[in-house]
Image (cartoon, rainbow, N blue to C red; front, side, top):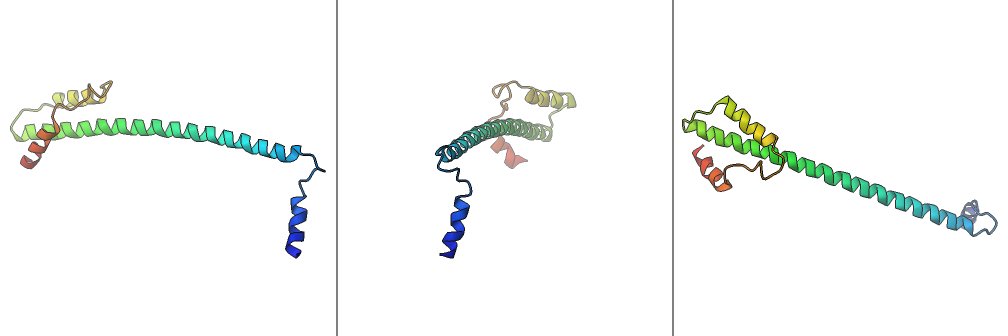
Length: 119
């Protein structure tokens, strides 16, 4: 009984004399807050997708440079003359490619697998 008495005055603290607008205003405020939070979540989700896309883009670039380095290393081991200018040109070709088709590695993954045991 003592606990119920303690709760009762606290629940009536916001009571405005029977005006139904108080609970309605509170519900409206909560709904507006929910809408604002939903918009914020959507903005954050969109930003996250953009960051993930950018991360994947740069990872592909790095992977292409890694494949190029493996290929050039295999060429050097076979006695081919690889010039610094050729390396720079190939790396710049990867870095400055506008889309993925332009930056595709020249080797097939199967060829890379064949080169791996020889290395």
